[in-house]
Image 1 (cartoon, rainbow, N blue to C red):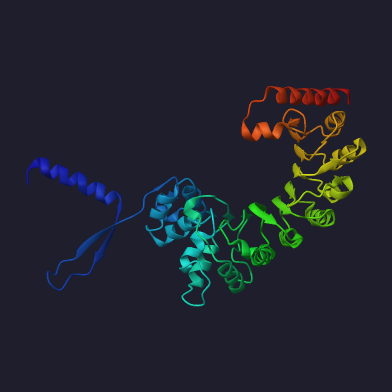
Image 2: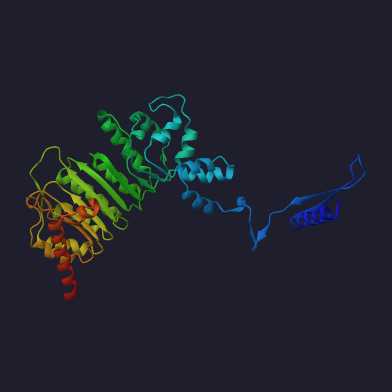
Length: 383
């Protein structure tokens, strides 16, 4: 061996010894010589192991949150430990029930060929069921299959769900009654919901709201449209929100009618909502006449002291102009306001929420809003 090769061998040997543990084994039967084997060890820097297998699952979950779905799917195939954390992120938020029910096979009601254990393992990972109006998820899940799933899982088909935006699937019109019953049963079994939004679904049964509020003690947000609710049933539905007065912060309701009744809504009809003392965002689209006196506005302001967003959209004649000063006086925390006055400038009288959500430029409407907020600030200085 040349001198240069000898030096290189000595250097490589010393490096190997620095990161290895030497073990001696007894002589083998063949050679009669002892064998020395060096096993690599995990290096530590600052007392922390460099092995990726020792990263806490909570930290791995934070890493997977930053990945897209394709990367998470790839991470599922690395090892069993990564598989669990990556699957949690993949199934955390679904745009529809279609991907979940897809593991069962055909999206129709049948008694055979259902892998409910696999369904349950994925369902437990879902935290948000959103609504994505996309053709990819426009498949039809039969109402019977949804009802069957609820029957098989009496404790809730999505036990860890926190946000529910509807089933997110197209259903035949003649299934409305069955779907309404299934929805009520579903909400009764979801005790951990923080947010309920029902876009593109018309609530026809007050029991739906009652089931949601009764089952979810920490409910913070509720959005829904009530179809053909009479004044009595409307008030009954609002009374159920009072049960969650300590948690509800955002309530957005639409009261729609198949045929106009020509009736009016006054403070007495919406009075149960005054118990929502921690509310920050309240928006009501009544689609009928709203009659409020200045004393009513004062009472609303005293009840909703922390309100930052308020929308009262009603039919003609809307809110009288002098009442705007009363709103500015009793709602000092308002940052966004929407009060409709039909018959004036194409319907928009004072609606900051409309400008804020649509990014529309309306000079006249902006001037009115600026005047409203100047009055609000002037009242604050006087006080």
